[in-house]
Image (cartoon, rainbow, N blue to C red; front, side, top):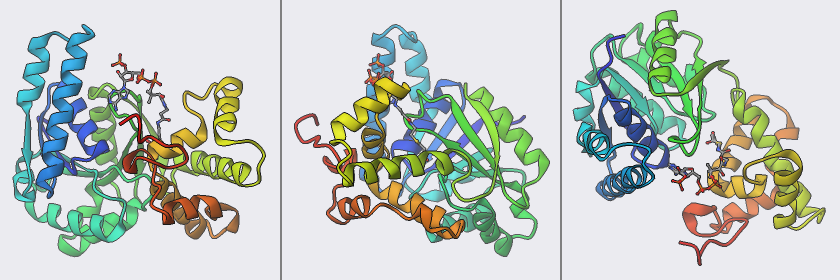
Amino acid sequence: MNVKTVGVVGAGQMGGGIALVAALNKFNVIVCDKSVEQQHKCEADHKKRLAREVEKQRIPAADAEAASKRIRYVHVMDFIKDSDFVVEAAVENLQVKKDIFASLVKMVREDVILATNTSSISITEIAAATELVRKGSAARVIGMHFFNPVPVMKLVEVIKGLQTAEGTTATTLELAKLLGKTPIPANDRPGFVSNRVLMPLINEAFYAWMEGVAEPAHLDEIMKLGCNFPMGPLRLADFIGLDTCEHIMNVLADGLNNDRYRACPLLKQLVAAGRLGDKSGRGVFDYSQTK
Ligand code: CAA
C-alpha cells in the first residue's frame, strides 16, 4: 500500500478523531473544514488530546509533537489534492456528500481511494455522483465507518458499494489496520450492520421512556448494570446526537420500507425543541453544568 498522506474532509468530532488517529500512526494528514472556527476547534482539541496522552504516559512527548506536526489544517478543499487516500467525514446529508465527492474526484490522482465515514447513507449513491464526473470512479469509492470516540473505539465498518473494486476494499482494510483499528466488512444496506442493530435499540429506549416504563437515568442504569453497556442507550443517544439518531431511523424506515423503524415521537420532539444532546448542552440529560 502506498498511502503516506491521508486527507480528511470535515474537522468535526469524527473527522478530527480520524485525523488524530492517522497522525498518531505516522501518516501525514491534511484535514479540511470550510469553517475556520471548526478548524481551530479541531486543532485545539488535538493539542488537548495529545497533551493528555503524554500526561498519562501513554506516548512520549516527542511522539505527540511529531504527530502534531504531521497535521495540516486547511479550509479550502483544493489542498486535499495532495492526499493518497481521502476520508470524508462531513455532515450526514446526501447532497452535501455527493457535491464533495464530485469535487474530490476532479482534484485527486486517479488511484486515490475516496472513503466516506457515513453512518447510514448509501455508498452506492454517493459513488454514483463520481461516475457523472469521471467514468469508472465508483470503483474507488467505499464506506469507512469509524465510531465515536474515534481514538478509543476499535471498529471500522468497511462498506463496499455496488461498484466498489476488490482492490479498493483490500487497501481500505489494510489502512484501517495501520490505523490500529479492526476493520470488519459489511454490505451497503440501510444502516449497514452497526446502525441497523444499534439505532432500533436506542429508539426502543425512547419508547420505553415515553411510555413511563422507567425514568431515563434508571433505564440507562438497568442497561449498564444488567447488559454491560458502557453507556446507557439514552446517554449514548445524547453522545451520538439526537438529530443523528432521528436521521438514521428515517434512513432505516425509508430504506427498509418498514414502519417499525419509524423514529419514536419523543425522540422527534426533543430534536424539534433543539435538545440535540451533548453538542447543544441538553438532550435527554442536561449538560449545562458539566461543560
Ligand atoms: N477522544 C479521545 N479519547 C477519549 C475521548 C475522546 N473524545 N473520550 C474518552 N476518551 C478516552 C480517554 O482516553 C479516557 O481516558 P483518560 O481519561 O485516561 O484520558 C478514556 O476514554 C475513558 O474516558 P472517561 O473516563 O472520560 O469515560 P468512560 O470510562 O465512561 O469512557 C467512553 C468513555 C469511551 C466514551 C465509554 O463510555 C464508551 O465506550 N461509550 C460507548 C461509546 C459508543 O458506543 N460509541 C459508538 C457510538 S455509535 C457511533 O459512533 C456510530 C454511529 O454511526 C452513530
